[in-house]
Image (cartoon, rainbow, N blue to C red; front, side, top):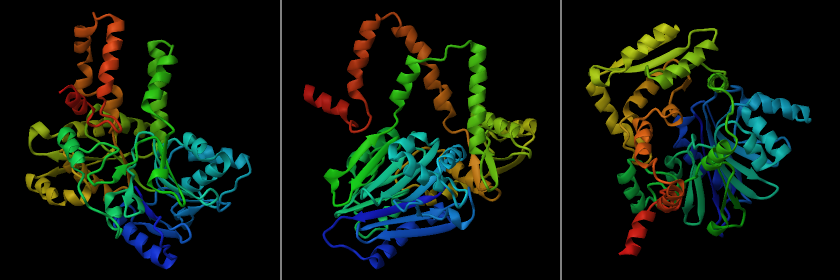
Length: 438
């Protein structure tokens, strides 16, 4: 991973570059752990804008991948965290349109795409995970962009007339204008969900940029001039799938799914550094590793954390899968003392409250893997996509209870309960509704 940060000071007093650079450097220093290989800063005193970047080199290890990076025509300056997996395909298309490239990074391809197709059209072409800060010198607008599913984090907010943003809250806290007041509504959300959902954060006036969103802030604008546009949504994707479903036989669907998964894994294996995978022995990570191994000339490096308590120990299953696939497997058994030793450092790993107990083994397996590889794939998200959690399999039981209800009545009930969504800007809709009834 890499890290981005920065700020735009919209106060009446304009700061010089000599003042902007040390501040954004301290913000970048706060997240240096995200990118230990390189660091860069850039400032535009006239705009009161500063960008910072910390790099973990994965593609193009040479200085030509240094950020913040300028587009060839100097219109755009970008700090970017993530990876655009189809950058080679985009580069080939852009070269056919007359663009030339000095290096082999995906960052340079993205900037050329912005020049060629414009902001939103280019983002729609990106297949990847990303958090982007893009300054448009021509339009004098700062854009923040987050990938479709929000894989890469991006916080932003206003403090004393200064617009702050960054990959982690640590970076924002390093700015002298930052206000660390706790948002009590967000605390309520945490107690309800065991984490703080987007767009909220634990701090007042600081938000997470929602997935699939472009935030735009014009120069000489203010809080009221900030706009957000959604370029992709899950709802639209589902509606499109329902309107145009796959019409082949079951065997054809299996074949098509296999093709999509293989291509997805292949794209994520493109790296100029050592690559491995977390392996738990479950279906998700085992499928990922199997698809990696079928497309690798060498044994894939796999990593597992084991526990002495049999009820929590997945290491034997992982070892069996690794043996079957022929991976180069590394496992580490953790003592209770070692697991407990992680607890005091959790506040330094997570910038806001987070109650998932997986955070401890995730940290330990990541620490283990980093001793051998730079990039590691995992099976995270597989359960959500393929109904692997028991809450999804219970749908058949629910349907047996409501299937007899006429469709018109089911639709009406669905519309009624949609008013109680906990989505963006409606975290307390049900409570507010009950108050109105009272």
